[in-house]
Image (tube, rainbow, N blue to C red):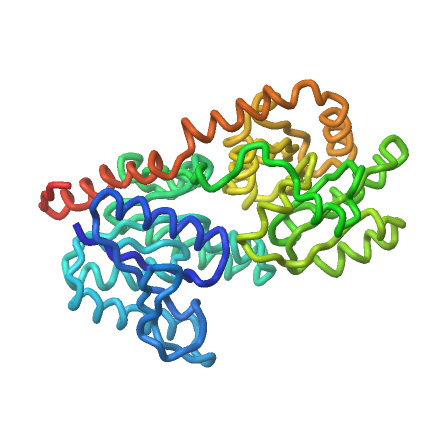
Amino acid sequence: MRVLHVLDHSLPLHSGYTFRTASILREQRKLGWETFHVTTPKQGVGTALKEDADGWTFYRTPSTDQDGLVAQMRLTAARLDELVREIKPDIIHPHSPVLNALPALWVGRQHKIPVVYEMRASWEDAAVDHGTTSEGSLRYRVSRGLESFALRRADQVTTICEGLRKDILSRNVPDERVTVIPNAVDVATFKFGAEPDPALRTALGLDGKTVLGFAGSFYGYEGLDLLIDAAHKLVPAHPELRVLLVGGGPQDANLKAQAARLGLSERVIFTGRVPHAEVQRYYELIDVLAYPRLPIRLTELVTPLKPLEAMAQGRMFVASDVGGHKELIRHGETGFLFRAGDVNALAKSIDDVLSRRDLWPAIRAEARRFVEVERTWATSVSRYREVYRRALASRGRVLTF
């Protein structure tokens, strides 16, 4: 079977989106399927038609920095039309955003090829998160309308979590056409309970310190300002406390200014962005990871990857009780939840975890067991078999997998 994946962006760019994509492609290849991959103009301006990255070949859609959204969709449709004629796929599989789904639906209809749309987040909510619109605005309503249009016309729909599945069903998409392909981890790539690198610990001034931490992008919805405020409250009882923030993003300058204002400049360590291959070394320095996501529509609906990665490594962590976290975390068994948006609840949760180190070995072991049994990519990706079978059956086609 041949599957043509339509992507917003791909490797060599690094993001949760590209890591999920690479995991899907790897496991689909293991199932014996032929996968082909094309990115839209969102990959970046350029004229290349093809690029190799990390052992994968990606078809590109040439574009300029003058192309608006409608022009980008036209370019994507034209490139898809070329590739469909060349590759002759059995399935066209566009992934979020809807800017990928609409051209795929048009080309699929022209060539009578079933389309499976994977909605990883709703376009309208992503726009609110990026600050380009507000919930309920005209742009928001138009974006939501386009998303709903695509979802209703795809032969099958996949999504990453139950929160988004419920949102899709609310748009009058039949339940039998929606399948959750949950985020997962490749547990073999994560060392369980690894000891910290003493040289790196010393270089960062963390010898003998209790370390709270976060690794990822510094977006407003991550609630990292709450973590710094919580650290300020905890310092009197935990004078050796340090906060290690690994990464960067839009909130970088604001967070540094906040730490300085609270007199925490020497206690909050900003590493800047580090190579993906090096992130594990920084994780190993952290005693308690914190995921204080704020309660907004995006975080209530979408499950993140980071807590799963923490579980795979056997790291202790606290997380806000937004819907996306509650879908992943069993409070007191695989991690700890606190009331979202409440700095006092966050500080208390961290204090409770630090004071109960006797519980850590059992929680670490249960967290690792959870991802090994329930959240492996092999288990998640196997669900596409039935999705593709249904999509092909809707067009009167039967394939032996």
